[in-house]
Length: 436
Ligand code: UDX
Image (cartoon, rainbow, N blue to C red):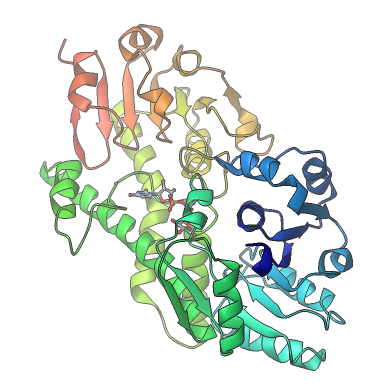
């Protein structure tokens, strides 16, 4: 690797930037990470990891000789061959992606004529690369290659996804830049797809939209299952055995959340709308997903008669297990809706950082599942944390005021829960009543 090792400036020390930096260092490259948040950089310089991502801390520690962290953009590009842009692109009021952070990085590259390539990993609307190319040309950097290299990493397994990807997508109009990116990723196994910039940008948006559609499809089937007596988990298992369909992303639940699917599906819809086209399938996906946690509250209300003055335990706050990320977590909508209905809340999560903003400031955080359940009129499983599988539900039942459980992840065996004394509501499955 020594011969082909490069100096890489990574802009953005979030989930994507840090994983990208740590993995490139692991591959032998020298990486300087630049972020605008001083606390984040201070932690990284001190050897701490500001986010939780399995394997990331170890990779950063093992490769600390190859990693530098800075607030200074000029220092980051100083002797870099490649600038990797991994900043966030949050939604604006119109649903479009806010590219201001991308543009401020591009601005900071003015004068960096020694660069060989600029690569955008951030999720951006199709056409962004062409605009960046124009900006680079105008800044006297027409000799610097440009590529789109979208990420497909899922939180909780981002390091593994980076090192063992289903595919590596390289979007560039320049063969030398394509080869440079292939060389940068030497040591990573996975098929490489090289294409034009616009197509690479679209691959990312299309992949996320299709995955969000798959989840939403099974959530719709779940609703029909509830009305007809079918069991969505059995349906998904059998449907998923068709190799053309596959079982992945067919788990019905409380709707997708996280930093990507909600934002990217809205961004793709906005992109289509901006060109005068209404992306009807995506409109439906977004609408159904918004409804999903609200439906859960409605079903619980029907079960309890009212939610006013009922004490509800929320089990899990993060948008999925294995992460501390609360972005667009269904738990936040659930908590707000339950409070609006007059309920009081306790919550438990092994990883979520304390949240002092609404609605969480009104929920009492407990350290264990059992403590959260104590005195509750009902509990909702929001996140599929393994701790919930290990909970002694039989004992916990006696601590609750009424043993009503809404399994929002279809995590537990509803018949076993009924046997343990619970009324068990689940997504796309018949409600079970206590059998003893
Ligand atoms: C996703 C994509 O998987 C990744 O490729 C992309 O780069 C970023 O977005 P991530 O948001 O980390 O990754 O999580 P993922 O595991 O894909 O789950 C997204 C959401 O869908 C979660 O809220 C999850 O609970 C939900 N989900 C997933 C379901 O409700 N059912 C499923 O069957 C799968």
